[in-house]
Image 1: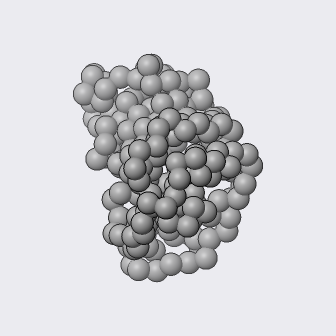
Image 2: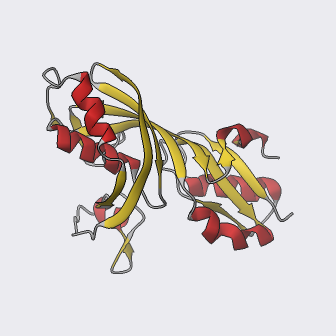
Length: 211
């Protein structure tokens, strides 16, 4: 079985958890995924089996498309809803048009500093492992590209938007940076990947149906 399987990853498990379940269910040792999704995120997770693992590098390099729900006025230490609240600020004085214009201003090539809670390496150690020990290190900015961004809805202190981005883009960091530019702070409340390269959410199957 040299295959590509598109999973609609449920919330509450890591991408590695999905691979482990697929490995047990299909009784295949050589299996991997293309593009990590955070535990709280849902949506398209591309699995490659056996000889298809040779495609992993090229599939990981593909553009990704997401729908994100951003919470304004609240900053967390993980930049998403799973973290501890660092600060809270009022958003009442910020007009919806200002929020929309600020979100749209992030389209294009830019540098992004990876979050501490990430799988990036620092001197051979994953950043998230350092973060668990309370260690914060200087991170080098990475060039990313927001190829398309569209505001879907703004209601009270929440904004929903669709974004197409290059490999290595952290959407929770994008939310953090949008909040910083607005002056009120923000974090990612929910995230759904609707496309990875040519594979869309319509192509995906539920994890429970993998057998």
